[in-house]
Amino acid sequence: MANDILKGKRGIIFGALNDQSIAWKVAERAHEEGATFVLTNAPIAMRMGEINSLAEKTGSKVIPADATNVEDLEKLIAESMEILGGKIDFILHSIGMSVNVRKGRHYTDENYDFTMKGFDVSALSFHKVLQTAKKLDAMNEWGSVLALTYIAAQRVFPDYNDMADNKSYLESIARSFGYHYGIEKKVRVNTISQSPTMTTAGSGVKGFNEFINYSEKMSPLGNASAMACADYCIAMFSDLTKYVTMQNLFHDGGFSNTGVTQEVIERFSD
Ligand SMILES: NC(=O)c1ccc[n+]([C@@H]2O[C@H](COP(=O)([O-])OP(=O)(O)OC[C@H]3O[C@@H](n4cnc5c(N)ncnc54)[C@H](O)[C@@H]3O)[C@@H](O)[C@H]2O)c1
Image (cartoon, rainbow, N blue to C red; front, side, top):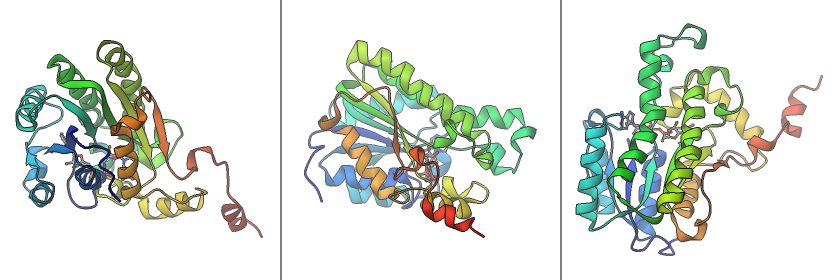
């Protein structure tokens, strides 16, 4: 269903790796809703080449950028404005990676070089994107910047490991940068806390299959899909949510406010 609610809007979408990626779905929906945008991902992810089919489908250009590298970001944002013909209205930061998780290091036995790398990619990169956009005066008033997060930022999910700390920091950046960007440029900054979703990043977490089933049973509406997440992102990029800023928005079928469900209780009955 398309209503052109992003008609005339220009954006930058980080993080479409393959057709399971949340960013991929956001790009498809943004295109349907009339937006034009640049797709970007880390140069290493580009080698897999799948992003080119998304670019073709959505009439977008692809610009490689490592989100931890400020020079790459400056180039990306400046070129995006040139390609799209003006300032940017929305940015999606859909980036996450933990080297400790990848290498199977326990939370109580972190390799701190791994920790710093994961922190830079998953959290600090959001600040770098915002700071670069602001310095280049790249965003239109009422523009909307979103990052994706997970409830492990607030509550313990042991196997989420150091990503929990990264997500806490990411959500804090949305509040702090959102304050300054709001006052100075009327740009809004939010995070969306999404249900567990079967993607490359998601399935890297140990026990993910069991966990996604548990979450499904603990959410009155069930887990939110990547497509539903994309719909929410579109709403947040549109002018229908102009006064929402500095928030962490749960998009999780009610999981975050549920103590227990009848279905889960029944599993423990003798
Ligand atoms: N899948 C889930 O269960 C889930 C739940 C809540 C939040 N999230 C968040 O959603 C976001 C998107 O993840 P996804 O689930 O779509 O998985 P994904 O693996 O498809 O996307 C992660 C992206 O991060 C990119 N990336 C990694 N390092 C980068 C770098 N240095 N520079 C630029 N890009 C880089 C990857 O190339 C990839 O495209 C992440 O922030 C993730 O933590 C995912």
